Amino acid sequence: MTIAIRAAVPADRAFIETLGKRTVMSSVSARRHPQPETVLANYERLLEIVDTRAHVALVGELAGERAGFILVVDSMPDEVTGDDQAFVAYMAVERAARGKGVGRALLAAAEDEARKRGVPYMALMVTEENAAARSLYERSGYATERRLMCKTL
Ligand SMILES: CC(C)(COP(=O)(O)OP(=O)(O)OC[C@H]1O[C@@H](n2cnc3c(N)ncnc32)[C@H](O)[C@@H]1OP(=O)(O)O)[C@@H](O)C(=O)NCCC(=O)NCCS
Image (cartoon, rainbow, N blue to C red; front, side, top):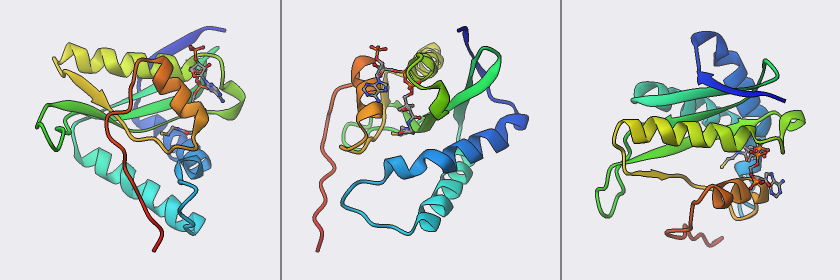
């Protein structure tokens, strides 16, 4: 099936919001036990934050149907080195469309956009338990750079 990646348009907003809300629980680490409504509210807040910053929003289509999206904040310097880097705020693919290369194509297209602007790095955060996302990132060339550690008190 043909995969097409294009820039998101205002008419994609509801798709990005609903697919994000249907999938965002997969980004909750096993250590945390939030109320689902809090996670959903935080996802809405994330969309608002992305809107206020320079960003790239891409939609992936499979056989002409919206199948996934990626949101990348344009400039989020590394906090230690100050290196300019693009940062994946969130991405998701519809369950029925997974395993067909849409996620990989979205990520590659977002990297191309960043490269065009001379951004030297792309970074992201992913939970240990999110095997699908970790596999996508590792197979796309991402390596663990630091560990975000947490202890339940
Ligand atoms: C993570 C996600 C975006 C992957 O999208 P996808 O379209 O299914 O990914 P692709 O088909 O492009 O697969 C990309 C690579 O990851 C691997 N992969 C994908 N899903 C996998 C899984 N469940 N288990 C193991 N490997 C997997 C594929 O083998 C593929 O590697 P290859 O290209 O070398 O063969 C999708 O599972 C998703 O939307 N998950 C819920 C939301 C989420 O977790 N977002 C990430 C937040 S950090």
